[in-house]
Length: 83
Length: 279
Image (cartoon, rainbow over all chains, first blue to last red; front, side):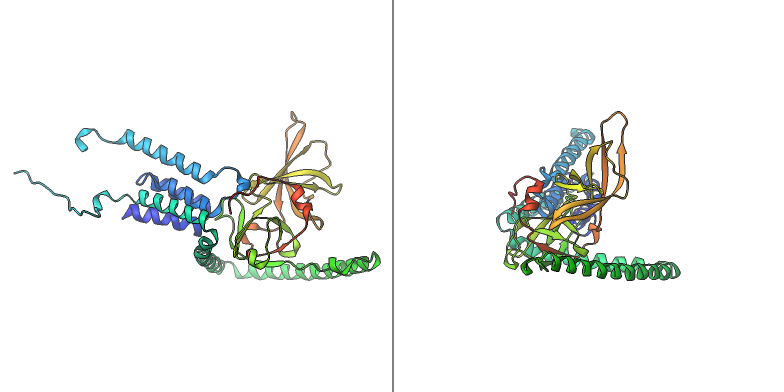
């Protein structure tokens, strides 16, 4: 339930709240759902990207946070007993 | 005795393997495709959502403002009313002066009172991180690429960077990567205004240039129009140039409408920007 709420809230935040809060929610969600920062990044760039910016920053930041989240999870994951 | 727990199984959907992040990612990619393939349809769907966001923002602002000190608000209101009266009289005087000058120099009637296209702003910073506005009017209303956007009081704020049938997007002068050739100060020194994001702009100028905090910054429009003021000058004695921080005249975070006008090729030539590839 927490995962769903955080994911949904991050998406709502892209439209309803300032982007720093969106970024915070996406990073917070990444602890439970690593793909959320990337999804939020793509969604934000879908809505707001302008060619003048050159690089789709939000997608790139999202991808970086997703990679980081996967890396942290791989370090924290238990051994073969838990699998 | 060891107890065995069996997970509830479902051939189509298993609650144990639900990954909200994966679904969100697939959804975002699908939306991106819709946005690229049918941009007008995409904005038709999202415009009501943005409008509801604007409504919520306005209502919450009013709610929190209601907790303000009544005495302070009354004093502030009185002060603003006085300032408004002064500005109205100054404006009328200037208007009279302009009319006299136009009559004196016989300006053709076609160039007087150029009426632009009013467009509602449905998304603005800080929600949009790239300092752009989504407008609820597009090519069907006569909006074309490269039109200049003006805020209240005829202050230029940006340029139309993409147009669909019913929607358009305006990139603000403060957008990161946006470069505008303008002027600064009373001497109208030529500068390149760089968008710094977050509603602010910056420029680089020689340290010896006669610029002070409070000087106006001008952008090309019909003539030179003020777009902001110098709020800070970062100067390092070891460097030959100083960085000037510019605050826009209009608060881009609260713009609700803009006027779009075709100001000709003057503005296009003043911009150094990438060609728009995204509709």
